[in-house]
Image (tube, rainbow, N blue to C red; front, top):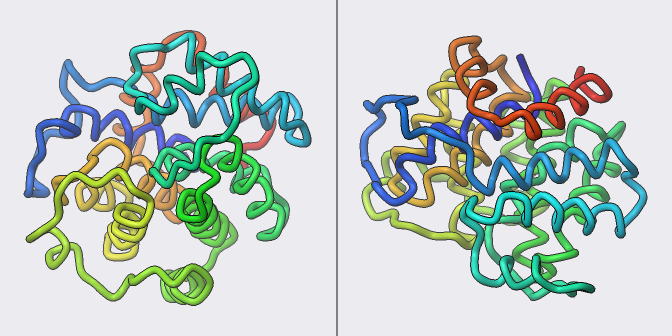
Length: 262
């Protein structure tokens, strides 16, 4: 299985390590505490926007607010929580990685790289209108779209380095030595992309992301969203992730896959 299941699986696997950082790739993928967080909720909010009306900013905001308020304890940042409580919310200049963690559906809907970029921009700017917040969403979406259409890793790497000026010339082992919790796009999106680029398969990409010891669920969601466009998500992972969604989120996931699944 390919698609947005990669972001969802990464989030759920990383959820138990978000505040229990580890610096090893040898860890349990799922246990009884594994569950979805705001990364999955907001990914599916974006998915539902695209199903309903990808041309409407109002529909986008409606879905972000609806899903956010239906799952108030999913783990949102303070500024986003305040945004959810406003009647007519304005973007708040965020440079955090929330824009990148939720962007993957845009890459699966688009018929061109340009459309993917436009949808990614729209999905980010209603909250994360800081240039770094937008950049993180665009870079992640570009990587997913390019992987989806069959680009090789070197092509993806060169595109991201050239267009977004992210430093991808580092190894996971080098990053892991000094890396710590970082919610900024600038300090987590390049690292998440490297975790994909260095991986052997989908599972290895997730293990790379969690092993950095940072914002594990979000980094694994970003890495997983790219990896699941390049490789199939193994059935033993996708099955366990899907069965941790509640009926509302599962319904949104199924609707999106039926309409846009490759």
